[in-house]
Length: 90
Image (cartoon, rainbow, N blue to C red; front, side, top):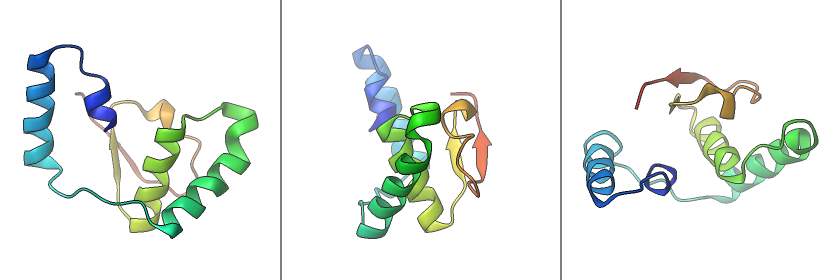
């Protein structure tokens, strides 16, 4: 969803959908555990860094699934302890 949000042209939208289908085949639903983790992160970091709600949900999902988070912007996730981040150039 966050990748799609950044699209500004029809061609960009098509490219993102193609790459997402090739690289990110699984859509992960929010679970109670992910939601609880996201709330915990917000409780601890909202006053100091104002993290974006979407970024917090993404980080909580990666943590709960014990997966590496691939991102084009480390600054959105650097504050999350225990989160393994892999930066890529979109």
